[in-house]
Amino acid sequence: MNQKWNLQDIKPARPKKKRSVIDESTLKKAPRPQKTDRDDAEDVMSINIVDGKKRKNRSLIYALIVFFVILGGGVIASILMAGAELTVFPRYREPNVNAEFTAYKNPQPDELTYEILTLEATGERQVTATGQEEVKQQAQGTILIYNKHQSAPLRLVTNTRFESNGLIFRIKDAAVVPGYTKDENGEIVPGVVTAEVFADEPGEEYNLSPSRFSIPGFKGEPEYENVYAESIETFTGGFNGKKFIIDETELKTAQQALQTELRNSLLDRIPSEKPAGFVFFDDAVTFTYESLPAVEYGDNLATIKEKVTVRAPLFEETAFARFIAAATVPGYEGEPVRITDPNIFTFKYTSATTSLSNIAEMDSLTFKLTGRPQLVWEYDADKLKTDLLNKNKTALPSVLGAYPAIEKAEAVIRPFWKTKFPIKIEDITIIEKIE
Image (cartoon, rainbow, N blue to C red; front, side, top):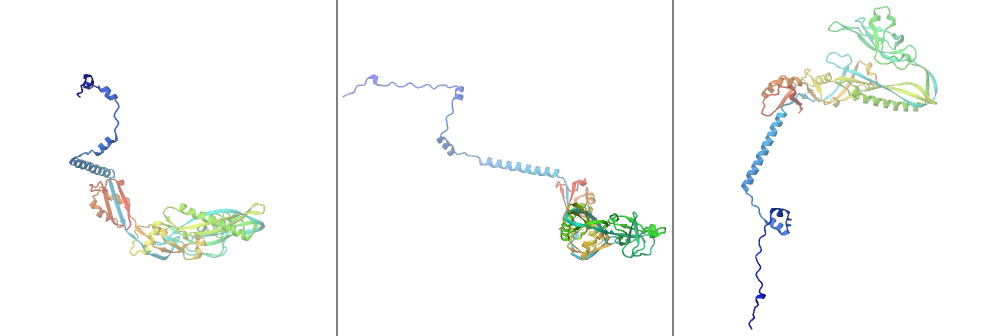
């Protein structure tokens, strides 16, 4: 059976849509489409092809830029740090020292001398007292007797009187004062001797500070002006009155504790009070102790007082170094030298009693030194700089010929293209090295 089609059953063809025209303002306002995971995957899978030749050229340019920056920086730094650095290697020796030496208060040529640094400290402490007693004590001390009267020795008998400020003292033993001598200028150098004296009477007023003394027995005679004495330290021990009675054990314990405290405080003061340019040794320090009269503190209490005096022999650095060099280095001819570290020595008095003696009253000190010091020959660094000003680097060996204390030296001049030393002394730096 043939089917018949009705024209209404056939759908008419859709007309073509016209492309709409969108202006730019609409596009700008339209939202951007979101990027999907698929789009990201496609980006990852895309391959960028770069020209290898261009990359190589770019790397070369970068390398050249870095090179010239470094080179330029080095040149600028060299110019800014212009100057000369001289490394000096001085002559030195390290002798093995193990010998006994003597130093003198009044030395002869080529002998070692010393000075005495004296420090004092007093302190007090309370102890129990059981009563009082009457005490009379005469002051004692040491004097130096001088003879400017005659070139022959002068003998003074035991108990010869010496007067100062109206107070009379007597020498304990007979003394022989050497006659005077004359120096190269014809000046009189008096003979001198040390003597122990005691006060004619008890009393604290006899505890004199350093003073000058005359001899009353010579009054009206030529000797009166030319034979005299001087004390170096304060006289001690003079007392006339009541003293507290204190238990001996308690007293000794308190005294020892106080003395130790004072001694340590004095030792701490030595380095700061020592004059510059001098050497001292810890084991050369001596101590003397003095108990001062106790005073009332309260009911059954007394205040004890202790005085500690520390004395340290000081050696002038240059003279000490030269003395050691002359004694230990063969061929040494008196050139200036220094000891880099004097504390390398072990110092010990020959006599064990010296450490507890008043070394200010002694005319000499005998001791043993042990150690291996480093002796370095000295040179004038400022003069060396002056001699090198504006000199060619090749002239360094000839300049050093005038400095026997220097074994060799090495110079670095900046900027590197310069061949002469600077024209200003402050632009030359000296560095010392000991090989």
